[in-house]
Image (cartoon, rainbow, N blue to C red):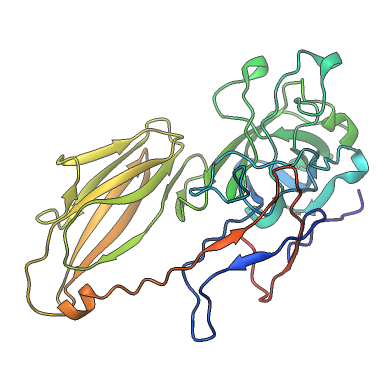
Length: 371
């Protein structure tokens, strides 16, 4: 374990580069809009809410080293739209399972530790029937983190952290897939005892109940952009501010996600004399741990003065978490409202067959964080 890590200023996949056709882009387009791109990696952040426990180092283990740049495509080599949510995995993901392959991240007690750990997609691990039958797709070689830490001023030991669903333990535990463009927030909640003396012992401890208690929050970053978090649960929305014109919209959709067991509830706390919900009710709600939507009913704004606006606030709650969405409706002139400024562009990548491996090297031209 020599401290190696992926350099995500540059992204690699495996051999065979094919031509990319991008239509309707001209030098006069500034800025270029209308192209959808989806991150090919999963991001992992670390939190620590455990009392008297310090996270010193984190290792990424059993990770894949090969992944498709594009989401899943069909038999004709065309990208599916919308892209499926399931991982798009090559036959051989180049999994690295040896102790010396683990990638070191020096946390040094600095939690939250954000935007440093990324990995390729991986399927959810399954129990192959016991220690003697564990194979490459089983719990033994599931992508995991090895956390090095200490309780108080005690000695440093190692703990294994798997990407599992909250709520079940032991043989009933369910594993999570690692998906492109998803964020996984691993929160250490309690250290009830010391870990293992060595990294190797911790890596082999997948069948043993860990002394390190943790929670894993995961969500699709394409659907959820803004998040509030209280150390235990999260509430996220696709939009925090909405600006619309005077025209009527009976189904303006906003993505909402929470992992709070009680789900979420929304109320129009300001401007309820004009803004409402598509269901026609005073409140609407959604369940936990599912991609849900909040649907707004926005009536026509009968005001002939260009530039006039009205505002409203939609308040979402999930347990003790609260998030306000600001809604502004403004009047624009008829000429502007009737003019469509849509620039149509398509970005397609061709493949002769699903078995053909896409490979490219993309150099990011701006020194900007990938996620």
